[in-house]
Length: 380
Ligand SMILES: [Zn+2]
Image 1 (cartoon, rainbow, N blue to C red):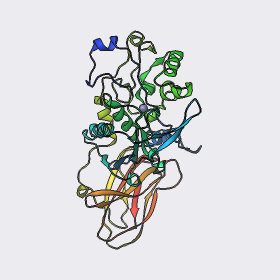
Image 2 (image 1 turned 180 degrees about the vertical axis):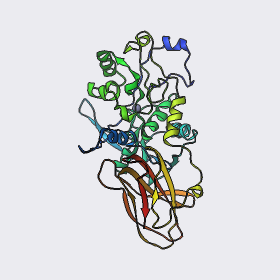
Image 3 (image 1 turned 90 degrees about the vertical axis):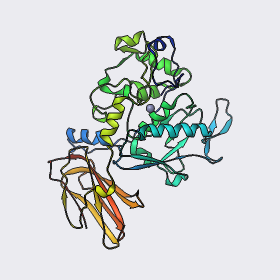
Image 4 (image 1 turned 120 degrees about the vertical axis):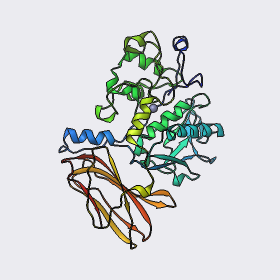
């Protein structure tokens, strides 16, 4: 996202044409490609891609700011000198990031955010390393990073640019760049884009510019079929970098700022707000429950073991699902285990110990089912 010159949420038309843009851009971390076998049909692959990296709804995403003097890394400069650059940042940067989390939370999503004081408990680990740009891994890819590593970096001041924080959290929620939406129909003046990004403040090589701007996303991996030019996931662009739509030849492309109406709609579709855990239906032991949900939808069930022992949970039928088990600990849902069988010829399966009198929540998100209604879940 761009460093913004003003905190106002909307720019006036006058400022769109008079202010030259020299934006800092986010450089999202590449996703681990899901290897799907040759037997996976195009429909099925598309359904898997559309949800891959997304969180199971109801997940509590914990975040942490690096805070120790030893947190950081050695950077080799052009003159050959090596300097240690810290990841920790000033309190003002943390305050801005907390506001950015609140911007998403205020939508009333089913995913929630909680700051924690320990990196070992955190899923999102945030650094403020200057010179390293702003970036995040996309969605569940953050879980693949070691607990002493960042999943997100904010490389410049958020003082007048909280949108960069909101944008990076958008990546963590599984959203990608809107200007790479294949439905946007943007035609780039590619050489001009490469040249603009090769200069300061980004100084990007062509490959990075291609990955973050020119490259079109796979149709199945984007929400909706329309271009949202006000999305917080959209970069601004100076006039002349976009050939079509033609108006951006002569005027800059500048999103309105903050979360757009469509950002809010898509986030709520993917992560709808949920009622209290006690309102979830109970799945009794040895009962197989048919999953009558559409692809992309999710079921939340309560499991109430009456004995402490090892249990097994699995889905049945030809479907691609992700299942996640949480334990209700004083009203907080703690992650206990998960499995994702998408694209594989097997069923999602968990084997773990549960305790008598404790309450558990099993969440099942369906990617794809060969035959609607012929999928079920069972625990024993
Ligand atoms: Zn980005």
